[in-house]
View 1: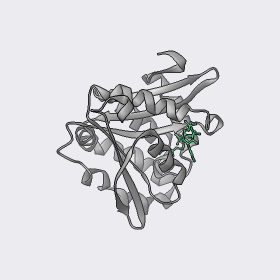
View 2: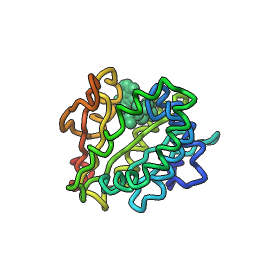
View 3: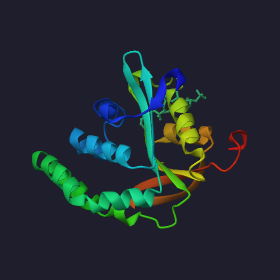
Length: 206
Ligand SMILES: CC(C)(COP(=O)(O)OP(=O)(O)OC[C@H]1O[C@@H](n2cnc3c(N)ncnc32)[C@H](O)[C@@H]1OP(=O)(O)O)[C@@H](O)C(=O)NCCC(=O)NCCS
């Protein structure tokens, strides 16, 4: 792929983790540690129906967009391996006991969101640009290659993002052509916006 956009490989995982940590410094998944993040993104890469693009710069990776088709299937695979994931999380919790209430509260959240009717869906799980490179159109470029990577394989891209205190990111998605579908309370007081992008239309109408 030209312009530095290319598909992710296993060898990119350390850089992907570094970008995630820099772009999502205060997020729960980041608090679970680099081992958890590497494990999560490795799972996406090893899932046959993944869509995972990177932006390569001269000095290293600048950003990535990661997701998967049939999200229910992806989360069911994660659920089947929840013991090995729990082990990674437990190791982290032992050194940071303050994480425990959040870990307990979020357990089951993922499994509850598993949907059966997802055969036409592609989930955009994370899009992240290193803060040193933001505001240069990289996020928009990553979203564009992600959308094209999913176009012939799904009908709708779905994603969720925080509703409150996150106006910039919400505007970013609206500008790309995502449409707000609904909002829901993921955990007490934390509202999420759910967006959809219709792929079964020509690009100019999307
Ligand atoms: C959101 C993110 C991916 C955008 O990447 P980026 O490379 O900085 O964005 P771009 O330069 O491609 O911007 C595209 C457009 O969105 C707008 N935009 C992007 N981030 C914005 C923000 N935080 N506030 C306001 N507008 C924003 C830009 O102004 C631009 O619009 P313009 O063309 O009219 O100028 C990046 O800021 C990021 O990684 N944020 C932290 C992680 C995150 O929250 N990810 C999304 C949730 S999964």
